[in-house]
Length: 148
Image (cartoon, rainbow, N blue to C red; front, side, top):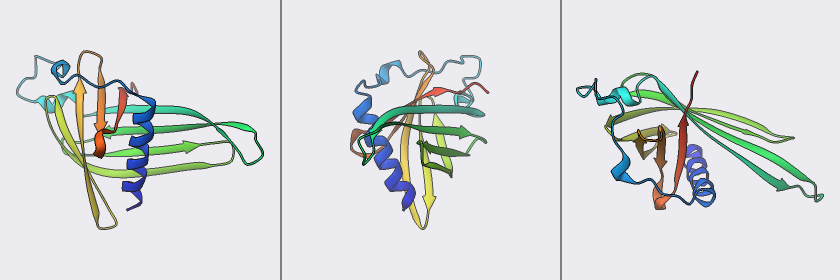
């Protein structure tokens, strides 16, 4: 249950910070040499979304927070999402395993925790090498490919 509340709030914050929408017409496979295996667009890849924010503590002092989400597609059907939240006084780090399915350019990520299951849609945009993860209510997070 904790993961669903966190993802919903993450996606809500991301939507308020990012008002541009992905054009589904731009979603095409970047690898014409592998048309029989569209999973190659995401298989063995990692994607990062990092957001920096400023907040005020109870004494009126300004501080910075950094929230980082990394999606790793490890096999043809599974991966994990890393969540990191860092402030001057707080450090959170969680890992959420998931299963996924993908067919160029769209897929779904399914996360199960504590008897609850949530499915998120995602789209891969080959023209700018980004991945958008969509939550309920039209909220989404934009990820860039992580070069490791």
